[in-house]
Image: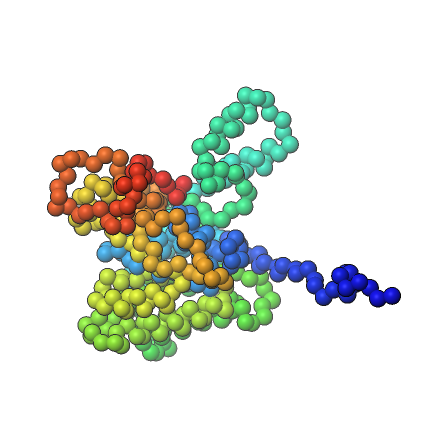
Length: 390
């Protein structure tokens, strides 16, 4: 007698098994699309861009006028690579790469999240009195709400900007440096071609190419390029020419770089002084060549520095483009009205809110409230600043 059509003996449906996720230091899969992520070194920036930087992608940081805050984010990115043992590649045309590496922020070893996780691990199975339970609950009450449950899994570290990273930590991590001003007879071609050749060599010879079979343990390569596209890279001719070919060589470099990273265990962060490009179409084309694009607008030397609306911040944080990898709809933050604040020991990215009370004698000649935050005035959202960092 034939088996029923719905029986398990003749069905063609099988349970799909999940692929094994690569276990790499300092990396974790995304909860949205399964893409492997690494931390930028700034927890609030990880939260804004969707949990971290996707492996195989390019992050563009449109630098502020003086480039101070953009390079600070670049140093956070490199410091996080040192803490996770990632290989690094640092390219620059102005400041020497060795100088940038010497000014990396010092890691904070005794952060509250790590202490709480270690306390739970050491006291598992222990019995507490009612008074001890109240002390432990009060101690956890001050932890950030979005990470109130301590975990032994670490993603990202905390850093102290007032102290440089110890030199013994830097010596344990392989780092390849590229300085444009150093002349080498073996390097030929334009500055962008020389830079791409060095990056490609590091990816292929370092074992970061996914198309080749590797026998040793896998690792991640962090690529950092400081002030790409500045006049020191030979862009002064392109900036002075207002034609359709302006910035074509830079776009070709970014296109080739992204194609190389798609099949590699590498992530690239590029800082670029886009305010030096007179043609806005070139800037938009460069943004499309990258996966993630953010902009920093510093208040230093601007009229907004004296505006009471922005007295608690050091600049505005603009999201130009967010990645859409392995999904039709990418991550979108709760709000696009963001600002950054530089404290003595850390840099934070926060939601931008108006102060609770503005002086009635505020000059009418000052900069008006940006249109992006104007609707929040009538919605009663003024008040304290809700932080994304901790």
